[in-house]
Figure 1 (cartoon, rainbow, N blue to C red):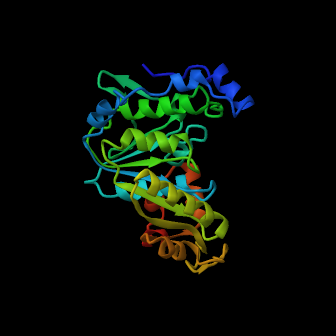
Figure 2: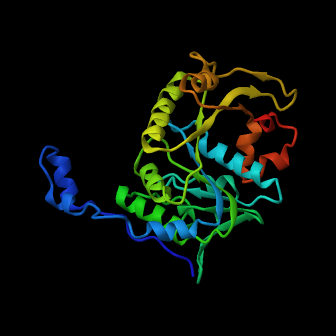
Length: 293
């Protein structure tokens, strides 16, 4: 049996009242605040106890290739047959991981142990709201509480089993989804977050905010990766700068913020092609300069 989504969440009158009258206190909202520890936290911790490393993939701005980087990283880790990898897509309103991993037509199945991930390979599984949608083109028009509820359900009910890595792909910015993931995973342990940026200052500006968010939330920043750092010619393998770094790029920002610089991923047309077809870029193009990261 496959789980299904309920109707889109309607805004409570109390929330609409706050929007219309931002200075007016709302007793209804205050009364609905959590009264104590979330009883589901121990359940989540127990469910994820077999996962060795939990890593968030973050970016300040949309369009920098964060989900592409997550898919590349998942495939790269899964090239080791002794490693088991999971990807949890928490971009509720814009899920793209299933497409990039070639499983967007799949559905979720429920067993006595919980929700079963969709397996891309024997050692690479994925969970996403995309698998719950009646049509791949259906929009998800949800407010924060309903998004948070689904993220909690992913963490509480998905039976990952034993994994070496769980990569959590997140939406851009610092929104409800980020706060929820951090809150729910805090007790089970997050190894940290990988930041993804492009060389331009307009992207770096938002990554600074994302790093500040992590520090305030107590999330360790594992490092920063620069995506689309230069055009890699598929013919001659030479590289040329397309988006020139005006203020030092990702490497300069990493030095400025005191975090490790993980490397650069080139702007390679074959990466986009592999994502469109849901194929492993590394299997298709083993000579790619993207391996260098």
